[in-house]
Length: 185
Image 1: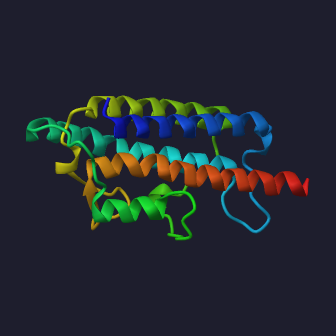
Image 2: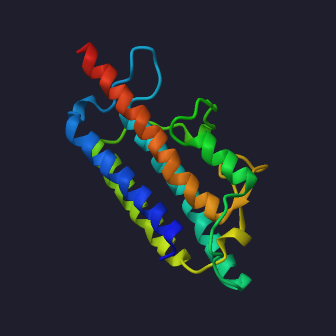
């Protein structure tokens, strides 16, 4: 697999491992607790990631179909492009940019912790499988629209890269939420 695609697959796997460590450390009945100052619970952070993955998967599948018909192969080095780089930076961990989540991506914590984690695992497996299918394709030549805004477009490589960065951002958030909840108990 192309080294950059393998790196993304590793990032997806790292996010999965973080989630499983978090799940092991939080009693299932506390997943839906919110921080004192408001904000999302641990369950809501992960449910949001599930909603996001479900929105990206059809976009990525369509992009891979178009890339297969484009001709040519993968470049030696993929680039995010300007818009992809910007969204990747804003959506990733450590970003101080706060963006109001559109209604379609506001999570609920109705499901049990095990259901949320199982869904996350299934979606991760699908995204990694798509990365493997993408190997050798000209991902840099095929643009996708953001599921968050009709006005934002970036190349398919950037669409793949945004996902694990976004996951790590919200896993950071979930870990902070749990630390606060645990500290006040």
